[in-house]
Image (cartoon, rainbow, N blue to C red; front, side):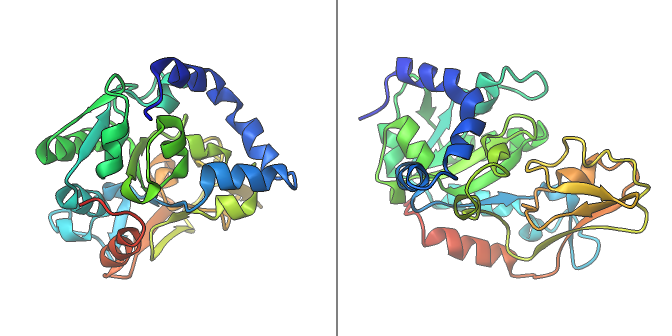
Length: 271
């Protein structure tokens, strides 16, 4: 049964407490219950912004087959049902002033038919393609995968018939709580296959990248030089944030699109 709007509004009011929820997952017993209820079966990946990607060497931006967003467009083409939320619950709850609050998630699959119609609407494939392009133009990042939290707060299911495509900003994203959450749950959110992010010798130690640029607070300054930790999700926000061009994101595996699609195809049926 679709969630009533009043309950969604109540969830929004509690959104700022998501970091407390994340810490609760580290408590034995409570954590197991929360994982089963909210994260069971999850597999979600961050997609880097197209414009920060280098495939092997400099990428030709006209070769669309190499760009991470093609994973999103593949599933839009494959899906029979496309549902756009008329708001982003993360940005609206956080009263975001830097990114549009009205550019919400895109949900694909039959389970989306159960979403409360006051929260969004079914759209055509063409409208879905245009929506995600507009999100990228606004500076948002795509997350794509099976996300049980969405089936819970939207009151829909089954989970294997709902593919989530989030359009996230670096300031309000739900998954900013990854540093606080139980490691096993955090491991359900990953980077794309083959993505590497590294700091070059051009780094001047200005600390811009370690001052809020990273979704998961994964960059530290060591000896006057930025160091990226092993929790990196490969979003590439630090690449664009660095004023000296000292961080690079590379994908040297030419089959990374196919591998991403194959992995997601096994999780959710959208056609």
